[in-house]
Every structure is written in C-alpha cells, then in structure tokens.
Image 1: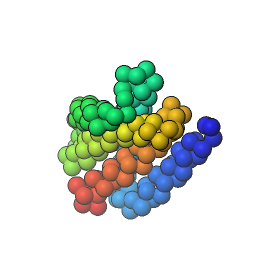
Image 2 (image 1 turned 120 degrees about the horizontal axis):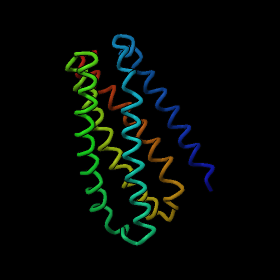
Image 3 (image 1 turned 60 degrees about the horizontal axis):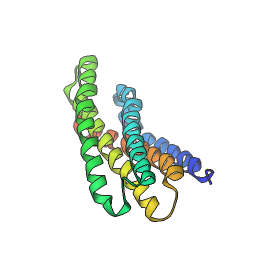
Length: 167
C-alpha cells in the first residue's frame, strides 16, 4: 500500500532535476541563485506538509468534511500566503543583505511567497481529493504533496528570477 507513493516522490525528484537543468544557463550567469533553492523548496514543503497533516487529521476526526473542500482550501491558502509573505520578506532580506541586489531579493521573496501559497493550496486540496476518491490520504498525500511542491517551487523560482533578473 505504501510502495507507489515513494516512487511518485522519486519521479518528482527527477522532474525537479530536469527543471533545474533547463535553467542551467541562468545558474551559470548568477550562481548564487542555487543558494536559495533548498530554502525555497524546504519552506514550501513544510507548509504543504503542515496543511496536509491538518486536513488529514481533520478528516479522520470528523472536524473536516469533504463537502467543505473550498472552505478548507481557501483557509489554508490564506494561511500559506500570510506565512509566505512573512518568510518571503525575511529570506528576501537575507538575500539583499548578503548579495546587495534588490532584484535578487525580490525574486527570492516572491518565490517564497509563491511556494508557500501553492504549498498550502496543494497540501489542503490533495488530501480532500484523495478522500473523495476513497484513497487513504494519510498514506498518499504526504509524498504527493511534497513532490508536487518541490517541482512547482523550483519552477516558479527560476521563472521569477529569470524574469526579474533579465537572464
């Protein structure tokens, strides 16, 4: 029962590898972009896992019902955005302090906000969908959520950085 979900995580890691490879030229031009990949992916992964855990627990205790999907998702998305805003400013500030490039700081901050917001969205939506499909969200949601967030976070980060830094 647990076997396919780590495989999904493995495939997601390979997808993230290819996405990063697509931005190899950007990384060669501005190597310090790589320094922020772990924190952007990690912050998103943490929020996604928290949202997923809250929803799975709520479903199992009866405090959350599948029929309330959009109410739950909107609440988690709001929380993810607020957390992303706080940490985006904090981590963007670190980027500005370390590298004194405001466009890099904005890129990092925007990527954190995006990553954490999307993570909350995916982290709350996936368990609800799995529950509706009669797939145990306690087993399936974690690997699926973290893998999805890793892929989305790294893609958004490089898209934002490429756009704002003109690379």
